[in-house]
Length: 475
Image (cartoon, rainbow, N blue to C red):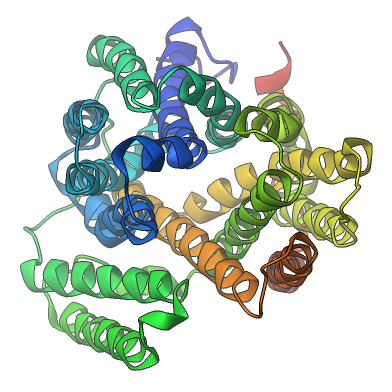
């Protein structure tokens, strides 16, 4: 498939990478487009605030709840098979969402779409790591993959604004067209990767049920934090039940002959730090993006399209991640590049704290530019660190752990800023602005914590990941 002696990707390798990157781009753009189109959906279907929030939460529940199971299934049943099957499910239910006439139809469509993404994402990432050997080639491939993932979310804000102005149903139909093109290209191009030691054994059904139930309850508990009026007791019970199932899962995995998650994988310091870093980094950005959107649309009165265009500059990571980041990783190592990216994010959030009623876009631009740089430096190394040094037959599991952390981070970041922004009486624009300013400290604090955790990785791994020249980038 590729010339490992020259460490250079050929045309087929690039084609495979573009197909796999296209799938993760599809996930990012799908979520971003829906977020921008929510006001139009509510106006057309007459949905309550709770139902509208449920449309977003249904996807999060499906994605976060089934991610670990998706990683294990990919390792056991085959990455290619799972990738193609769940891409098809994603296509079908995204299209069904576009035909919805009631809120419950959207809930079902988004939940199943989230489940499809939970099985498709770890299979796709495992196919990337399986198709490109560890070293400069994999660094280059993961740089392109991560940049495409982040770029999908950034571009989705603009595309969603454009499609919502035509009709919100196109926010669901557009991913159908894109996923159909990816599916047609994937069938002949993608071949099953052959791990050095295939995953053996059957499915740990008891472990699958307990971890899936635990993830669903914990994600739902995080979502409940957005609405303090739902009852503190119910939220506490939800978290308690989720933690109880998690404890039961650990006991089951220790005794299982074929565990769903081999607990020994968590002894990898880089993997644990990468997952914590992903949770904090992505969670901080999700919270910031939510606050910035409310500020621009509800305080400043900007349209959804103007808001998307204002954040479009963050998408420069689509260019920098596959070009600049692999060079930096090969020279300085994952930990240092990741550390620099999260530090840049801290600076970006701090610069946005003094937002005011008359802030110009020129004043906001440094934050948007720095966030684009932060994603360029951090997202790829997070993906690399989460799978680096993991045995081939457990790449699906490692990918599932990473995406679970990302989804939890997203849910936690959104819920935290929503809960903080809802405190106090925000009946006037000035009061609303004050609440949003307070909420901005949440992503700032999360990013600072991410810096501290990443700094441990620098101390424990002082040497660069590779001191060899970069033959993969010679061309």
